Image (cartoon, rainbow over all chains, first blue to last red; front, side, top):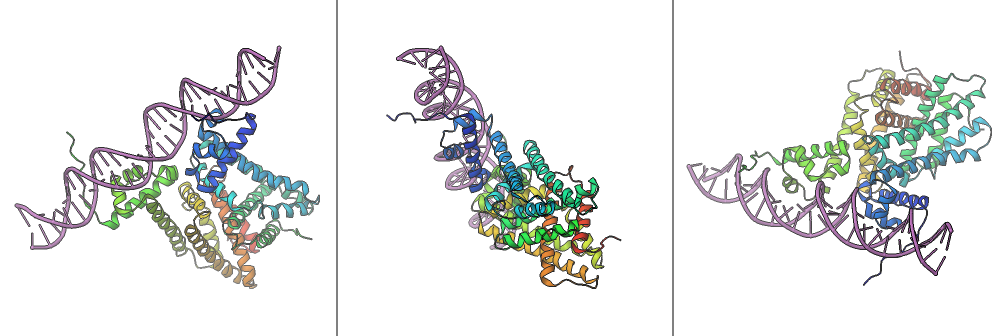
Length: 209
Length: 209
DNA sequence: CGCGTAATTATGCAAGTGTATAATTTCGGC
DNA sequence: GCCGAAATTATACACTTGCATAATTACGCG
């Protein structure tokens, strides 16, 4: 008779991370309907009971995965900030370019994003995550815009800056989407040039040296 | 004993249309996983066996529904042009305002769009449909932009116009998304004002009277 | 070394899934 | 009016799903 499957204990954080990663992989490959507890567990190298042990319900796991995905995308942009130059205009230019270039632009990320987007419309928990991560990204952009405008000697008032951030964020979202969905139609280099030109027009200042 | 449910025969086209409409309604409300054969049949006012009678498989029905949805969206966009004023700048302003206002901004439409978007990443046929409809919308916008720039006396060259259309399209997509996903965070009136201001900056001309 | 506890696996279950097939009803043509 | 074919309903089935619970195992701590 077959022996019971051997296993090794790993910390809660390790297992949660593995389950989240597996869930994202399943969704990316086959959509939400492919992310069954059994498929996720198999991919994470555990049995399905463990999911229940770390997440009260499957919905909780999906929500955590969504959070992880969005936070990761936002942080990918934020992390690039450290590598950017100190000059406010150059910083903004670099931030904008990153947002519409790989690895932020990525078909897999877009498939995942679309999957979660469709849950946002009806699941309050997803909605909350989306709202929070969206705000985090926009706030970063808003701060960069404020700094860049400061260099002109004619800074905009807070309300105007906020509206510029909303428009700029929408522009980046749209370009990111298109570049991810149809990469051959909108190559990264062109997306980058369009994004920077548009930001220059929106803010009324030069970004590139 | 209960009598068997009475029914009346309707043509094949009528029933297929009803089933497609019901499938879209189910997906919009509860996502693809809510579009079960029983739920669709109930909504269409028939019993589940009939689905199998008109569609070889459930996937066939979903594919037909997607086709119907995308075709409808494209046609709706084209139809709205007819109701706009003749003046090029006013036309562009109206087009932009429509794109970020109800009924175009609509949680149901966004849920359906997200559902199909996620298929685009995997299914080449869906990809082709997305590409075609995206191009159709952007071409409309590009023509409007070209006309509006013409009124300034300094029309832009084709390459520049194309880039402006890509940027404008991305901006509208992003605002549409945000207004649909989080209506209370970005009310229609504000989305409209931001979109028009941004277009004025992008094109360097006045749109509102 | 042994022991207890938490981690992990194994099993079971009720509900829901898509699909196949049989049983009935409608309705146009004769 | 009635008959046959097509439309529609009803039922059954095998499978999957998420979740609950019991059984077992790993591993830190004395």
